[in-house]
Image (cartoon, rainbow, N blue to C red; front, top):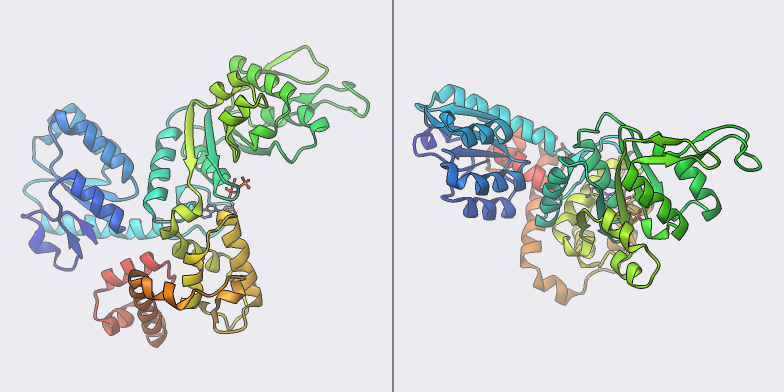
Length: 432
Ligand SMILES: Nc1ncnc2c1ncn2[C@@H]1O[C@H](COP(=O)(O)OP(=O)(O)OP(=O)(O)O)[C@@H](O)[C@H]1O
């Protein structure tokens, strides 16, 4: 579907599922409610409105934007910048019908490709951050902004919520993308080893140091180092890290030679670092050095709209491990997933899904396969929206089965256009 229908283009877009809006505010609201893959922008604002428009595009960067502009629109410098940065393509009036249809089709195809969940952990762009909640959209927008800068980032989030994935996405979208991304879990390295792991050592620095060793920070040169569980870093090493952040040089243990290292630092913590500072466990000066660009990754229970898509995503990711008879999640299981609080966040969802895929005995995953209790009848009655969504998903699933997974036939069976069916498949995370 496309968002925004021009008076002079409306007639030619009969095949499209169109939602027209009259202002950026309305457009934002519509985009938060539904995933429109393509947006048609009818004229850009004059100089005064450029800042708001830029903010809007930043927030909705994952839509393919096509502009329809007045012939003299590009004479304004801010307008040219908006077009160059944010539009996938643009047309000047009078609109050439065939060319516009072609552009929209192309943009739609690209948007669908980009919305496919990442097939492997190796694909680490923003596409790997599955989810269509408003919270994930905000996170993606923040990542996009932060990636433009080279300043330190401090990510806060509960365990398993996606801090490392966020750090990886920042790296992938930054100018350092071609360099290495080196994750280090400060809590997992024994305190006695951590200094030499991080900063390296010179030959003979201590018993057993038979040769020079390059530290992890040095090995990230030209790229990004991700320091997870930064609160676990012993205090003496906090001083070393602070020195590195200030001077951009390191000393290997046992060496007096300073080595310049060009690395961006992203740190993460699941504990409140401000509290750790107040308790005297974390250096205040280091906290301020790291906390230049703060990012919060919201816990899964605060973005329940992501649950269905994430669950489907992991079902497909681990499809090779599943019993052949298993076809997907049952309605009860999806309800139980919504009901659960997910203290272990996305990692817990992965673990429960994999467990259900191995142990599930029916055709569809049931709540007990996930180790979750089924919802009570009372709770069931409450979720009219959830029931509607479940019914929609079930109808699509059944239709696809009947049509032998042929989209054209399934769309006809459901009485919707192919375009609408593609949108529904993306919404429910159903793969064809
Ligand atoms: N939005 C998401 N889409 C897809 N996969 C996700 C998402 N968020 C997290 N994951 C997956 O969940 C797992 C946990 O995420 P990650 O390691 O980034 O969490 P974390 O906050 O760094 O955890 P910890 O603090 O325990 O190290 C990973 O396998 C990651 O790929």
